[in-house]
Length: 398
Image 1 (cartoon, rainbow, N blue to C red):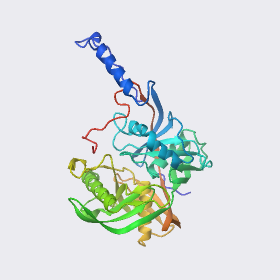
Image 2 (image 1 turned 60 degrees about the vertical axis):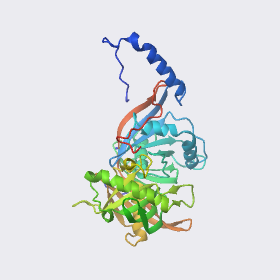
Image 3 (image 1 turned 90 degrees about the horizontal axis):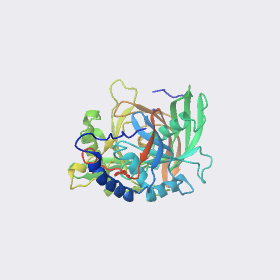
Image 4 (image 1 turned 30 degrees about the vertical axis):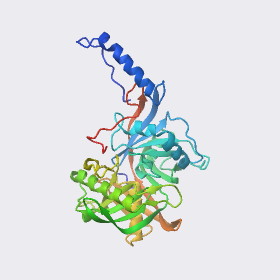
């Protein structure tokens, strides 16, 4: 494989006060509050502890939960995803919202090989903000593969380690380039990508008509030419990118809903702005993928916002390549370098033509790099007043 090589929060003890807030003056109230919190905790009367390895891929963070989550029912990771969404969403809120998370955080629950795909080394369930459980995520997959190899959960072979992971979308082939105990790059072969609709006009409140393409690349993408809505894809324009992106995405979902022909996955649920790469960049184009961190309410302009994927977005790269192929702009086997809002790169390629239901599709691959950033235990004491986190309107949409 030829790849360019381009990753305990511990609670502070409160000292007994020597000032006016003497211990005896607050102990009864504190004890009563702790008792009330314990009675309300969804985790019961014992401390919950999750073993987590944090990483980032091309700048976008991901938490990889390697222990502490109880068994999840389901014959496949897709079934387990459905179970998790229905009965275990508290874990997503715990890991992603404050005080343990923040708006751009993602998480992955590592599960054993399923009955349906025992050939996989592991499975992973992807958790994102705003109740979104993607069928697939490229940057999350690269983080998961890196963590599993660098922690020894999958034996590392030099120079190339090959294995399969099971995502909710199905099996994903992994090739990892390794040296001296470090994963230098991960190439994943994604599930097929295909066009839902091209050149669709969406009437967006406050903006007007916007032309979009709707493409599945592991999530359902609304793809928009940034220049067509007056945007330049720079970090300085982040707030406006999020505002327009979330508005266009929600309007598209209302006016042109889609669903996957082979699984229960409606959309669109994410948006990709496209634009030219930075000067002197090796990339063919640049993107800014806008994700939700709350529910948009057309009557509340303060909710017209989201957050930007810091990476070039793996499934977004797959969707863009499928869009370009459908428009005759990219050939099978041709390399495509995608640039992120922070200047990092993914390296994509269309491996073959295939079909998904009645749709002509392509099988894409994407390569990128990840780095481990910390090892931690995420802890919830039964008296914690925020057992499933919270959001505040200063940095969250709602």
